[in-house]
Image (cartoon, rainbow, N blue to C red; front, top):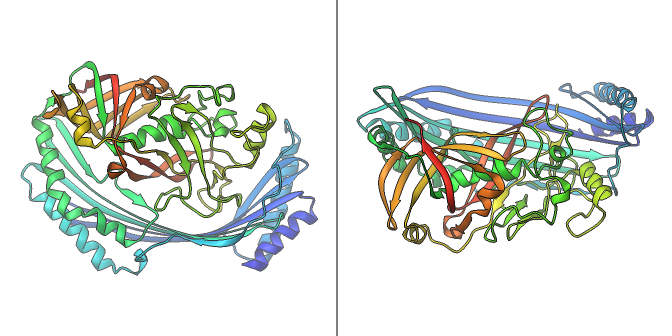
Length: 490
């Protein structure tokens, strides 16, 4: 592999590249799915390849291949150079990467039990037992249980002298129960919706989720929702469960702070952002209890690694400090552009904060979320409910929609409970809430403490043309929001 990398970098420089990097990525993915007591699928896929990125005549070029051969390395490097030269004909300004980044070392996800060493029989037995526990509940129509495991080995090298290797391991699992009656369909998921909860951890993460013990409760809630009253149409206080807060962070903060969106260089897939550079350090994004960081160093997050895909070390940076918007997610190029636009300051260092990430060897790095975390507050959930005279507690996402500037949103949840005089009362079905991002976060007056804080995983974040799927993390605890518009689908 080292010879292939050296051959590609040398070929790029000989053909005129002022900068070049090579990423070799090898990915193994294993998935298991059980539905209604039957094994629906067991799959394991593997792929490997490399991508060469160059700067020639002040413009980018990129090419990739799955053929791990020396001659192919030269051909791909040459192709990347030709693409860069063609791109230079239409460039608006030269690529500016700032000071050289020179990193050397290795990183591996710390796992207690490598999930790929656990027998398939053990994994299937756990899924089948969880599925059976859900099907024991009368009224359940469909049950599903799944696991996913990922191992990705990366090597990054550049003409600036970087050479880093990483091995990222992920484990994910989830169960889902669906109940149907008279045209009404209700679903409950655990630990999270959209199939599963996932972290950069080993088999120990799967065991901690305790799918079997939680299966009856999830199934009972799905059936109970069929008879529940619809969520009322009103303006009220809302307490969101941690998993829903995580998605709220992802859609209304995480995507909004990606600096390539702000500059409009990435807009086709899901729009730009309302957080324009003039707002940095001046804009009140949320209330004083809202503190959000981008942290690629926190253990277990799907956005946790040693270095990003430009070889920049993982780091933690402030995004929202006591409600004030103070930071973006950047790669090397957007960090320099912001620095040229605003000048140097503590919030604008002119160097990347390590958010350049690519889905695999055949995609270029984009500015992507790492772990965008709402820091915990002081409340226990029981005290927060007791402190709420009237409101609605919602949990687990069911649907989402947000405009292409990340301002106007509408989210539906799987389940809700009415709160009356500080007590959780009747069950409510089909709850939906809506708002405008800064108004919503400014209405947050309480965040639960670290005992309730979970680093949720989002393994399905889409962005880019051609499309890329990123794995991101969002640490969150339940939080309370005042004067929120809610309604229910009847």
